Length: 141
Image (cartoon, rainbow, N blue to C red; front, top):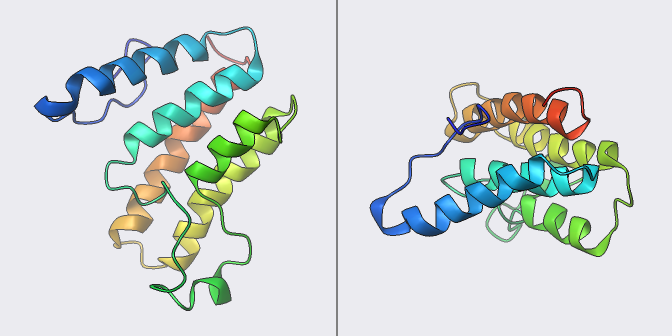
C-alpha cells in the first residue's frame, strides 16, 4: 500500500527506481487542486497495478477476432492517457471515469468466466478505481 492507502504493485528489483518515481508522481497528482490532474494520477496508479498489461493497449482484433462481436466500445489505458493529454475530457472527471469503467467492464464481459485471470484483474481494478475516484471527485483526501 502507498502512503495514501492505495494498492502498491510488486516491484521487481530492476525497476524499483522508475516505478517508485511514477508512484510518487501519481500520489502528488492525486493531491492536486485540479480534478483532471487527479485523473492523471489515478490512471498512473491503475497502470502500475496492471502488472500483466491486460488493459495497457487496445485489444488486437487480429489475434482476438471475435472481440468486436462481444465488445461494442473498446477502451484501454493508452487511449485514456491520450484523451487526457489532448484535453478530450475537458474538465469532466466523470467522462474520464466512464472510460476507465469501460476498460474493466469490457474485460469482464469478454472474459466472462469469474475464474479467468483477466476477469479477476478487471474486478479488482474496478474496485480499486472506485476507491480512487472518491479522491478524484474530492470526496476524500
